[in-house]
Image (cartoon, rainbow, N blue to C red; front, side):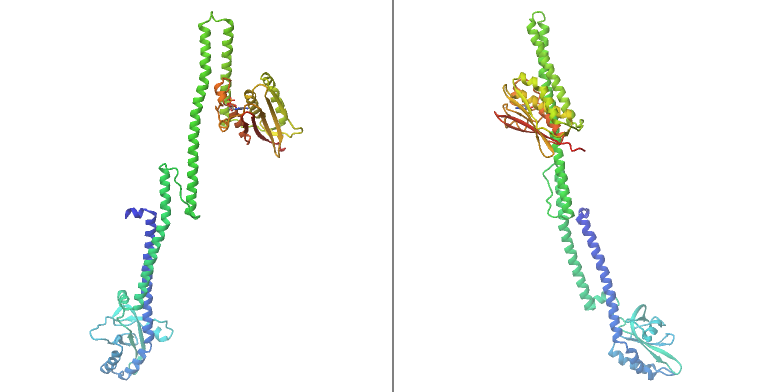
Length: 491
Ligand code: ADP
């Protein structure tokens, strides 16, 4: 029971039932009060002229001396007709001169208040006008009254209490009055029915809240699939919807954290691996040079030193690219966007790689439409991204191949494409080539200064310019890397 009262349903039902009982008590009180006034009113209305009739009956017996025996006889006859009445003879001040009722009844009061009497006689009465019952001075009852002359100079009243002892208590009234009994039973049934419907309704409404709380608990206990079944658009439905959205966000954030953590661990593993191999080879060559100091032919020594230089260059590149990528990923480097002519930048970068391309026996050219507008971008960053793409193309395209950097104008955009007719990228590699440290089969096996960071850096740069770096590649035919830059709109 205590537990039930701690639930929302319990509290709601308790308040509801208390309200219903209070309402029941108030309605019962009102019903009893109006019923008793109604009965009093009916009694009074039916007996309005009773005192007047009786007065004319007994007036002959009143004179200088009041002939009580005769009066009693007359009254007795009337009381046979209407046994519930109690009859009082009052003087002008309201003093009780005589009293007629069923035998055995006693009267406590000596006076009757005349205010209601006068009100009754004035004709301005509102029914029921209730007067004092001399037998029970604290109770007011319906009455009938008539003025009466008690002799030559004296006047008085014939005061009749109607239905003197009728409905003394509420319980008695309920027992005896059909209307009151029926009204109260109806009230009881209505309240009982309302109570029952209310409890069922509350149970139904709170069931959704209970179900919701169960789901939330289940989610809290690491069942991250748990979602609230939203079936309506009311406040409870909206709450459920909000919880579901919150749960989705929490799950997504957790996935993000897990992924970042995995990436971080992979990064450490990759970095240590990539640092270890050149360092080991440097150490190996240096040890050989030191050990064989005198016996090592000049030629060999030069070759070893060149290899060492190669490895240190590789280390330098790796550390530099790592630093660059981590700065880009931490979003420390924000692009400092400015308008510049993209065609000129392409020409400069192509020129920069021309030597390298010639050495690899490749043709490197650019296709630039005339009158191109300026683009808005970070010139240094775009140069870096372009260099990485051209460097890759030179690196992976076999001798005799062709590399072309093509600019095309679009509405609001200029598209930059670096196209080669190299070996292409295997389909299974395509989804991963933009990930850091991802190297295709060839780069992994050949020791060619590949870090697996070039495309990751280029992609990050394009991302920072709100663009997408995409690739189109067919095995044996070549690859094309494209991205778009926004045209400078003069603002
Ligand atoms: P890497 O230092 O290995 O070049 P990148 O991030 O620049 O690292 O490139 C990732 C991988 O994508 C490369 O290892 C290579 O397999 C593939 N790749 C990139 N550019 C080309 C290209 N133009 N032609 C063929 N394969 C490419």
